[in-house]
Length: 522
Image 1 (cartoon, rainbow, N blue to C red):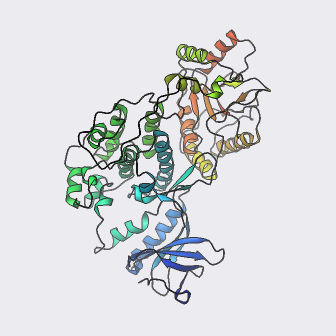
Image 2: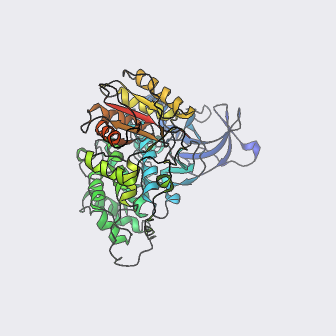
Image 3: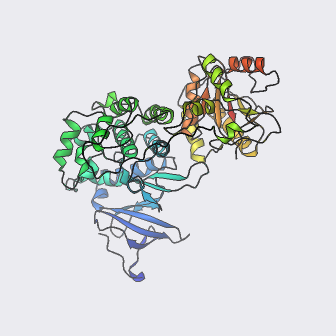
């Protein structure tokens, strides 16, 4: 169907605008070709499929349906489709995909990753999966080989994770009875319902694979025993483990592999819910799964010591967690940090201020609690160091709007830009517009004379925030802003001012139930 490309004279054009440069594989039914867009010189990859797929009316209808659905998936974490058509000379359906540079996730995570990196990767993958699920599609082939880790084009993350195309091979496998079966490497990531002929496969299958992927990133190993030596395992071996054999706890399997440090009971419970054989018993969606995982990877102050390995394994041992430094971080020790650590801890205990902040496993509890309540500093003081800048990408904005539009509208929206900064100010206006388009009532941006470190913070007035506030938090998380959150803020503010009358903080008006604070944007 598709010949190997040799001299320039043998190069072919697809769709009148893509010139084939090189054949990247030799699969005649699902060829992968390196190409160049003739109008721009941009490199891309052509996926060229078997003509039999569109030979019938139903096949052509399915192709058009796939093109339409794929055009509705809006995320930076799924490979971009530049064009799609049927080649007239051969009748082959083809997709032109963006050319991705980087390593596969399997290569990038060849050894166990730190929890912070694992979570960042999983958050990006979850964003891509969520966008796919929103249009009624299922990725269905979530494994390390199906994602690329490359250089980030956005401020705020050192890398970008992009899922590869999922519809082409699935379409081939589902539509042609003589299609080659999947190998052991692919079966290791499939949910039980994907291995049963005629079973309905929903987004719950991606939740199953997501749990297995989290285990793989944290431990550096495949969960199933057949993955220890896939070249020796058979498809039946994998099927029995997935559908029949007792599923061990994640921590027990990690101990068996000699992974250090060991996994926690919280992770065991999270993992067990992902790999429940009954799809209805899994997390209700990929967002619920990643939301439940984040505090487990963020909030563990000290990892338990792992039991000694039972036998030498050709698996990389996870690096030991370094001893936490005794000194507080520089941004806490500086004179411009207005809330001393001891005071923050006392207030947090007294008023139950809860927060979720990005912190890798192994940091001291004192550091976690102190950074949980972002410090305001006096006007004119140098802005302290902090975690992540305020950056909202185009895809992030679309994700926030989709989340807000899909849930009941809540209270009016209050957004404060601390110590006006051009980046944070622009993001604040953008957020207000997003809330308005989603049908929420908004207030003009607040501009308190307070400085805050970089980041997004969500302060709830009372200890029992209204239910709609969870919608706001989930929407900001979906957009990649991931706010630190705290409840009981009005009582906290009153206590602070009782002890320090000139303390400013972020004032709440009468009836104001929360405030989204955008800190220094750069």
